[in-house]
Length: 294
Image 1: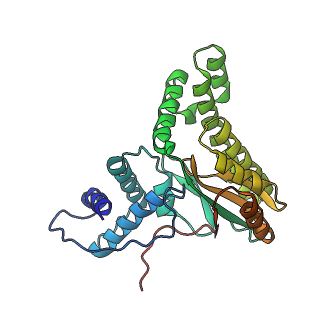
Image 2: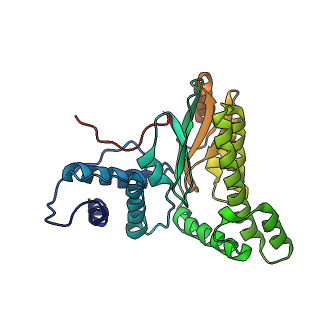
């Protein structure tokens, strides 16, 4: 509750008039695994904000602003310099769609995810390496260093041509090069993913998922043995189109795109060979946070 109160204090000035603020008792019940890379922090922030809206009667009209306030709570209270994506999708989600988000302009485009033959299977590795927090910040600093060396505001404005040129000139070390290469190629994969989904080309989308994980593993170096094992086990099963880690890395969950008829085969293969205690969830794209009246 201390965490909830701190985040509420930071959100209240942004969403309700300042006046007499009375206390309340609350119970948090969640099915989102903590530290699993499934936006558990953003979920709590957005749920808390939505709860405060409901009890005060003051709703934020601009939903993007709601996401930004929740992001600020993460920065100020948790000390995590996170991006806006988790809070944004938790607020702005549209049932049956992915969102292509421009994290600079905060513009977004709904992308249909309606193919009923395929499902997304979440596998929780149930491991969490303590490197995640420090390494997350380190990756951010490394990307900022790469941007400075490339003389761009952020890596979204960089190209592989410029990156290779700077690297070959000896102005960028191998680690910074690999971090930047991941970001630049991941941006392109994201754009391509939206295009292939619009065409209903789930096979190509699965291939992009595989390429994304490989880049996160080899260039960004935020995967771990357990996540790599889960991904490799899933990819071996007929009917799996793609599998990759999700979240900040060093543990947490993988996401697998699989033919609905092959889900049990994936679960069986992982359960029998994974050196851990995995937990499985079948998920579907849903709407953003809302108040449920009991």
